[in-house]
Length: 324
Image 1 (cartoon, rainbow, N blue to C red):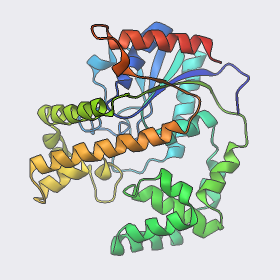
Image 2 (cartoon, rainbow, N blue to C red):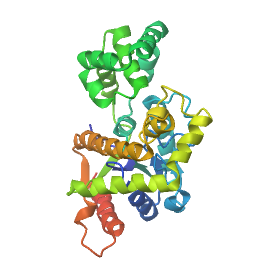
Image 3 (spheres, rainbow, N blue to C red):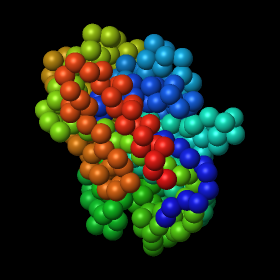
Image 4 (cartoon, rainbow, N blue to C red):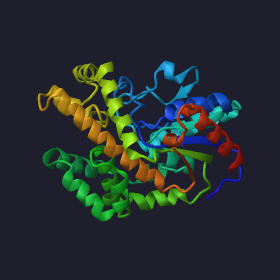
């Protein structure tokens, strides 16, 4: 459903390590914008190196929102993000500037653009006793059985939720057990309404997938050089990565927690991070490919010797100005 009003936003999406941050910063400077992060892990305080949180240097003076604010020990939902991101984007628009969403968490972005109303589902589909039983089952038997049950009753929800995101898996199954309707059905109800924003979507990908994989490998190497293992150790020591928390399941943190516990070597943990990140990038691309409104740009097609960000920025500006 298309919008007929002027809540125009720019969304720069794609897999991890594809160059979204640099392009978003350049676009913000060219289009009088501010960046709103759309990354489910960069929201957490203290998780900086492993989430590739943009540094002040990378932000280059452009205001960035919704990074580094949530307590990793506390739950944070898609509904929480939608509320905060909507308020943030509207504030930027009221100040006469352009909201530029940048990130790879498609679930968060899609529901923000759609204006998904979570309140009815959140308030009427919860049952503490049901959730407590699911939590006990998880602690006793692990997530596999619960995830299989979810996939059998709500395959769309299971496809969109990673098995390791136990909080969301439990919540999706709780909705079905309490109401008899799936999370997908509840979400569809909230989509029968005008979209909250008029989005121009830009996606980054690589014609040669091996280039993206090499960028991921180099990013992990750089994270180690910047002190990822020390970051994970400090977070664990200070109680910021409690068992079962979303933050403790984040790529780069889960693997090095295993290293800290003596379950694997540093090199083995690094290899697992690289493999998990490549798999995550594939899932991100699968998610975004379903959105036919995304205009895909390919950094590896930029002629040798030309500045990649500058070339892509010209395309972004043209697309933003000419697609409504």
